Image (cartoon, rainbow, N blue to C red; front, top):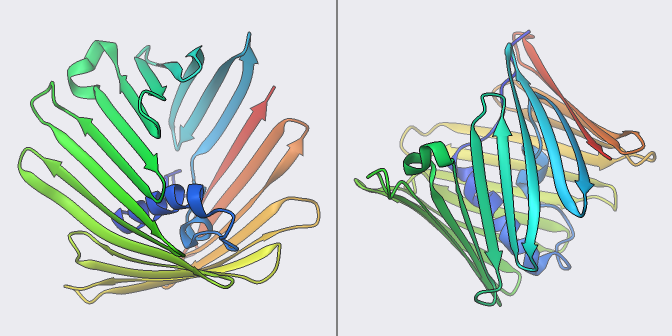
Amino acid sequence: MQGCVSFRAKTPRRIETRIANLATKRLHRRLTAPPPADILSGGISYDNKFNVSTKVDGHSVKADIVSKGVDVTASATGTYAIAKDFTADCTVNEKGDVKGTMAHAGLVKGLRTTVSGEPANAAKTLKVANQFLHGPVGVKLDVSGVVSGAPKVDMSALWNVGQWSLGAETAVGKNGVANYALAAQTKIDDVVAAIVLADKLETLKASATYKLDSNTSLAAEAVYKLKSRDLKVCAGVATTLENGHAARAVLSSSGNAQVTYSGEVTKGLQGTACAQVDQALKYKYGLQFNYKM
């Protein structure tokens, strides 16, 4: 058995996910199928996790335990509503590290600003994140490393035009532009399609989702490296069963097969099981449970 590791694609998935997250705030009533990333990689993890959450005097409290092979981490987070548009989080991990987050919305209509960092290591961890939504336009701007002398700016922008969502993102550090990407997503009848130029426009990815019926969707994607001419493809299916649970299967050209199954285990307890097997029959799996009191 392999150790538990997280499965995440690199830049192509990142910008498509950002576009999907921002676009669906405006287009969710018109989209008849989920974005391709939701089926092919969203929510797939091979960590073993247990999360419990509740509310105390109107404030949210949660605790997490995560196992990655032989490494086990834990954290507890409290969220406090200071005012209508002002919240603060405090997270403590198993090492005693403390991280604070403050978020404010409403100073400017459509703008949400979040400041986060670890008080004991503020120079390296201080980060200011801004998200602005106005009409068909969405912008995210994250700034970090300013105090430590290694400034970094991550920016992404989205523009909704009819059935299209057009996006771009870039990362800029003290040595100049580190990365940039362009992407577009659209809905045509029961199909949601996306195309991404990532890794400084050196990676081309095309993906699509087709909704068969109210319960089942199909997805496929192709990723092509323009310089090396390397091509990878994968396809997946996601469905909701009669008992309300969700199942998903994904196959890739590299020979990996992934399956997930999720649903309510008992009242208040949601569970997800993820497994992957490759051509050599090596496998890995992850179990995640979320209990809401």
